[in-house]
Image (cartoon, rainbow, N blue to C red):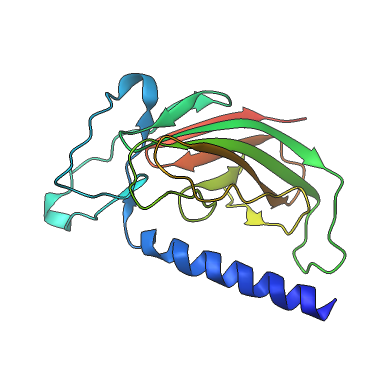
Length: 186
């Protein structure tokens, strides 16, 4: 058991180190239907996140986030993401210290349109999930959470994340860039 726990910790740390490359940048994701696919070869950008602008260059008023539903594809000229489904699971981790009244599982699909070094989608880095009260949901170690993997240009994959829900929540929002994916569960 200790060997598996150690191996899982090493794998998690490796994935986290790779994902940290994207951490110090801001998000720029739009609904795909409204964003033309244009690839500029002279500039390499993170597919979900762009470089932060100094305060002087930022617009005075922050624009309101676009709201979409589960199943709608969002993205930019480098990636497309579709949050496919959300449901509660009875799966619980007896060794987990995270308190969870419910465990929410979110299934997604993403496609790499133009990221030359491959792309992986990570909850907490590329997107966050909030309950109806505006509280950030925390990751929950569940057997139903599946890492999608890194995909090369033109390829796609699916994955899922499990999140701890505290209280009797029914409304959720996935924030990815300047888009919010809304859904309700009973």
